[in-house]
Image 1: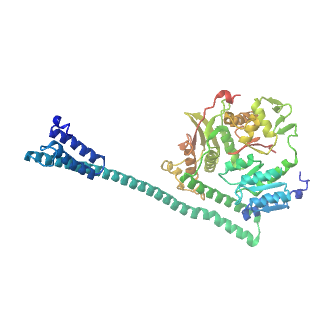
Image 2 (image 1 turned 90 degrees about the vertical axis):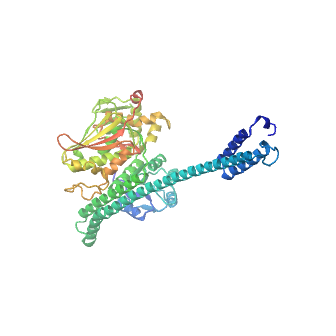
Length: 342
Length: 234
């Protein structure tokens, strides 16, 4: 310090010390800034103010300079500390907002889950009770007199199947909602899926009304999809189509824009414009004459979710000439032709 | 077939739910009075050891042992057919059991007629040593195993080597479910490879050549998520 004295004005030294004070204040605690400021005050007094090497102040102007230095250092220190506090407060605030919005999102999800549960409970208690009531009444009848048991037992089987299907649908929907559904996407052919769909209806009298359109002059159409779940979608759409009319139901498959497009077309009454979106809602049942009393109204909702969970879709469109077309799209796959033609 | 004394067959049902055991028993007892029941995997394995059943019905979800472990232990003791009772969403477990030597599966809830039919088919399979037929005729399709030739109504069907291999593996054991993995291993003679992607394409191409209506196959049946089986329509 003493060596630097001849080349350094007191004012210059003060600047250097103020920088040190600011550095100390910026790097951490406010008390460190104050300590450095006081040390600077003493050092300037000791090294750079005559009489040198004492803490005595000679001139009143020197005292002013010292006080000015100390105040500048302290004010700067305070300002810095305040800025840091503000920044900290802002960060905490942002964190709180983030936490709150997470809670809001969570609450919304809970509300949605609870709403679904309410609908579910209402639907379950109503829809599941119907076949149960029938089963119980008929079984009781058989137990009482045993007459006509075969015919009555068949009704029980039918009602039990209906019940089983509903329970399966409700479980599937809750699995889908909970994201607990794992898809096994594999390379499959469209024809295999179509054939398996038709087979689901073997033994059903209605199966005679199913017509298939496949272009056999072209190589087999290939897609990447979960066979089991896609089969459920197809079966549901064909089942709906068969139930809504007494005419032929046409299933066709084409490939376009990277998708396999299965179309299930019927000559039924179609879907009202106002209901075209709602038919895909869970537990939605069409207004008017109940074509399907007893079903829980979950089929199309599950079908659409199963399709979307594997990158596909289910859409409704009006069939020219009357009726409905449900289009089930799945991602198509590209295989090297030399491998497949071997 | 019915002339064979059915009561000589001993059936073992391994199932923890007493109601399902009762239902299975009710479905089969008319045909097969000798039904042994076991409510745990361990008891089932011991029953196989003690009573040498001709057919085992094994529930996939037992409380004490993993279904796969039970299946493997039974298979190590006997060649008797094993039919697995499965539930929905358990295709991958079913495949594992079939790969471990189970012969067929039936998904709950099943119809009792369906179960009885599967049991009869498996007992028939076990009795008739397969691969003895030289010419198999099914739904107008005639398959000459030794001359490696398939024909329908006298017209020879041209098959690629892979299609022929697929067909001959499937018809070597009619009625048996082959998992995708088993078919791949049998046709390509290895366990893994890119060609696995093409298995289903080859099956589709084969169907186009041998089925009357490839969109409604009656000979090569798809077992969704599991594999394929060859059946001879009546």
